[in-house]
Image 1 (spheres, helix red, strand yellow):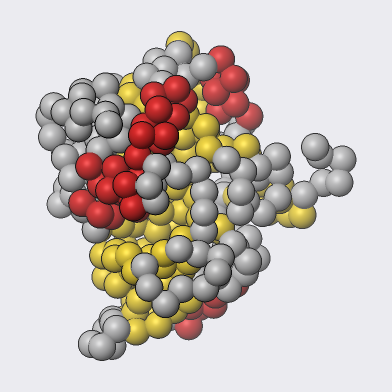
Image 2 (spheres, helix red, strand yellow; image 1 turned 30 degrees about the vertical axis):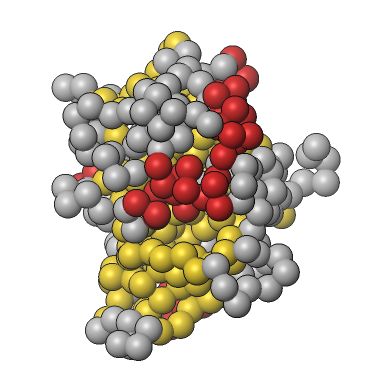
Length: 316
């Protein structure tokens, strides 16, 4: 069995908990040591410049995770070398995640090419120089499987201005607005940011940090309910994936999460934050676990810089 104190171990205690729960701790550890790198392989360096957006997970000043996206003409995210991803884009000043846009903090990135269903993960340290130029110093780089990704085209709208679509609260007295509920219930995709227990430490093991992950399923796979205090709760099945349990492992040791829904119908963005829990009983045949998030914040932008359309039949 791998030594839990091994500084090269690719997984922290929360992730190992779930590897043990499925009886595959050694197998997943061995896989992680093969595929999780401290640099971007050439195909990852070539992949990020193809994208009109990258998802990013950040921690605000209180350590709360936020999931959001950086957007620009393809090429805005590019790799000057295998250890660095440069981001020639910035968050708007009213983005709910702006408190996490700070030099020296940990960040999780996800590059997702929707029409090919390719996705690559990159975790590392956000660096912002005096001119405002941002880079991510790579700590972990690895690919993810294409399961549960709905193929569609995504394009960046040049000239879109955040000031033309101000962010507004989608939250009142513990309840989501009807518009926010509709976005969630018709979604087949969202993104979740989470962090390990020591993500804000100055000295991190290689397995610690911030993650942002894709979640997908049939439209309606995310349900909106209430807890016994009347607080809005989201729930969804945890479908089988790559067995790494990055998100569930983080929730196991640090339950705060941030969610982002990019509404393909309106182009709007919905940011949510809350506290997650995991249930393992009373489940259907397609999921071994359910995730529940008791919400604490919700913010809505009616439009954004990304435009969505059906995947071209000529795409592979």
